[in-house]
Amino acid sequence: MADKLKRADGLPPAMIRLVKELSRLPGIGEKTAARLAFHLLNRHREEVIGLAESLLEMKERVGLCSGCFGLSDGNRCEICEDPAREIDLICVVEGPADLMAIERARGYPGVYHVLHGALAPLDGVGPEDLKIKELLARLSDPAAVREVIIATNATVEGEATALYLARLLKPLGVKTTRLARGLPAGGDLEYSDAATLQSAIVGRREL
Amino acid sequence: MADKLKRADGLPPAMIRLVKELSRLPGIGEKTAARLAFHLLNRHREEVIGLAESLLEMKERVGLCSGCFGLSDGNRCEICEDPAREIDLICVVEGPADLMAIERARGYPGVYHVLHGALAPLDGVGPEDLKIKELLARLSDPAAVREVIIATNATVEGEATALYLARLLKPLGVKTTRLARGLPAGGDLEYSDAATLQSAIVGRREL
Image (cartoon, rainbow over all chains, first blue to last red):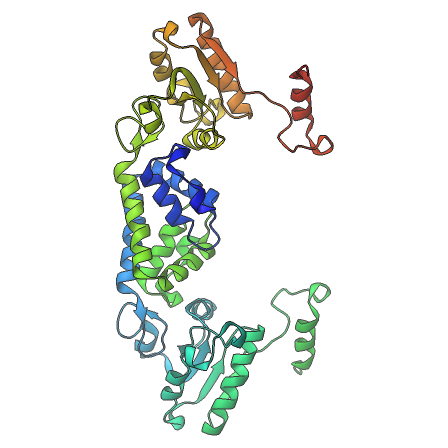
């Protein structure tokens, strides 16, 4: 669709270029891109410059933390550097967005390990494509780690990754746990899917 | 929502800034902005720089054509400068996106006049907020203009603007027309709304 946009549509080349760049973003088609471009055209110069600068700044500064492989603008992220965090409790997540979700929920006292993906053999994603070697390196002294919480998604790929990691960690003797599955907060039994209900029944707890 | 995003969510400040800037765009909430930011983080440096540059280039270069007030990266746009265009045929549209739609439909031989809005008294948009004075200036020699096609939207505001312009242009003696209304191409009578069907009946043509 994007290559259908031409100078002949009555738009100046600079506008066409912007629309094409914007329509490369996920979930943004050419019509949305054109709407965004028209919006930006009418915004203050400072606002557009601010957006452009924040793009460059992000690409310039943000890299991976050498400790947990989460996002960081330094060698190590603020969580790994925080002396109040329990470094013997490691929560393994698929991506930075998952880390963010857990941080947002508040109250998790440990540190993280970001895998940057989940096992998906059909898509050609194997263990060597994830930060699994790096996780094992962090567990080189298993006695220094109290618990590894595997917090991959509750999807087929996330479950496969969790099982793979559990098997890998077992010989090390590290306590390995998985996030609980069950009804979400505010969840209605009537509208729950079968898999969620089965998890909720299997994982039932005594009151 | 956007001001809820804090450093405490485990994101580096440069990432938070980008998410905030992106979520100022229309139709993009904080979750979509975060998704876009994560996507951009994983893209090649060149791609992100390309997007930032196209934003700056657009803001730097694109202005309004001094002839039709459409978008242009020079003093006059390519349509006004095109010797093949009939300059005595002026199509009045609300915005640059409308001009683009007509250009895309191909075959319109004339030039344009972009109003940059439509009359909306309730929103405080009056005739002085649109490029109406400028349209009258272009009609200062009515004999030099063959026809003015009013192509404002078929909305309440667009219709009000069309009526206002028609009344304004009548004393000048310039032929003033309005885009036809009726069934859209491929339109199904069964699913047409009443207003469209009424327009189609009133505007029926002999075969």
